[in-house]
Image (tube, rainbow, N blue to C red):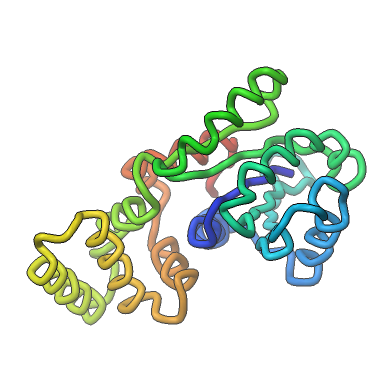
Length: 240
């Protein structure tokens, strides 16, 4: 089992789509996900954490192509509240051996994913890991920017694979944003452009948008998205 911790719900949904639509992992299902969540909620390290019960958890699995009758499992956790993000990470650090013994079995890795704005939040955690000699068990992925930057990079890679109506609608949305908000902060306009993609091709929800993007994303496209390429290499996952 590999456990991946996210500070935000959108990051969680983005990587859920990355695993299911691009890497072809399967969701274990709502019932088993709830069982895993209940085990964590009832454990001493987490039951007293404020708002942890509002966290989102999904467990995804894929057959290991190199090991017969073996599965590769990942658990994605979106922490329920930014104010408890560091406390939750500390709970995993302090309790990972007990969690292995009582809940998970062997935990291969626990990975913390944040964007550049939250990098300072994990600096103390990284020092704690170093002091406890846990760098082999824990790791971190820091986006070189924000999630919106990666979403827009993926769009640039796959945009020619969209239908004509979608391409036309997105171009019109982007033109309006460029003209109407040309003096606004680039950070705000990135969010407007992602919202435009949401409206055009992922209209049900942001999870739908990320699904649509990753369904068109190909193996050689990883070379264009450095963070995702590093992430796959770091996990040791092979794309079929």
